[in-house]
Each structure stands twice: as C-alpha cells, then as structure tokens.
Amino acid sequence: MNDIYDPKSLDVQTSLGPLVGQVRMAVLKGVDQEFLLDKDLAALEITAAQFVILANLLKGDTKSACELCRALDYDRGAMSRMIDRLESKKLLRRVALAHTRREQSLEVTAAGKAAYPKMLACLAKVLNRLLKGVTRAQVRAMERTLRQMLANS
Image: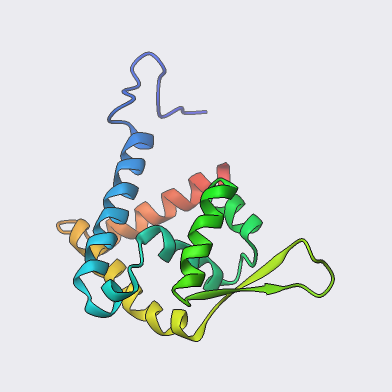
C-alpha cells in the first residue's frame, strides 16, 4: 500500500483533512452571505445549515430528525432547534407517522420547495467564486477523489 501521509511529516494544519474542513466553512459562510443578499431569502432568515437540512430532505435519503442527525453528524438538540426554526418559517413540517407516536417524518413545504432553487443558485455562485482558476477537469477529479474517500470510510 502506498500511504499518502507519513505520521512523522504530517502537517495537521495544511494536510487534506484540515483543508477540507476550511473549504466547508468557506462554503457555508459564503452561502450565509449570499442568502442575506437575496431579498426573498433574507426575508426567510435562512442559514446555510438550515439549507443543508432542506437539501437532504428534498434529496429523499432522509425523512426524520434521527436520520438527518446521522447523515449530517449533528447532535439531536441542535437538529431539533433547527427543525423548529424551519417549521416556524413554514419551510418544513413534522408529520406524525401512523404506526408510531414517537417518531415524526419531516416534509419540505411548498414554500420550502419554492425557495430551494434560489438557495441552489446562491450555492452555485459561492462554489463558482471559490473555484476561480480551477478547471472543470480538476473539479471532476476532486469530486472523484472525495467520493472515493467516502467509499473508503
């Protein structure tokens, strides 16, 4: 096996792990800023973290708060508060499941679905700004690398 990193020379500030985390934070910060610049999204007071919840629900892989916590690695209290905020903004709703009183399904409302394309446009704008000077081929290679890393996890 060809190890990429040697523990003796691994730089914990400039290696892949910290860089991925820093890029993630730059994307979230940029999305928060773009949402504030859009009058419709600014009126909703939506955050990048809340957008991620809506995006995951719309993708269809997650349907409950517990599933979102696992997928996004959020603690249950923080997730509950974010869902409360999204529900108060009428962007999602909790739906009681007929077979259990303990768990509820989450659904994105029509208002949430209507706002989603603007949110995606803000995300694309941020990503394109961060990727200035990077070629499409480099981005596709980076995406393949990150998917491989996830497959290895």
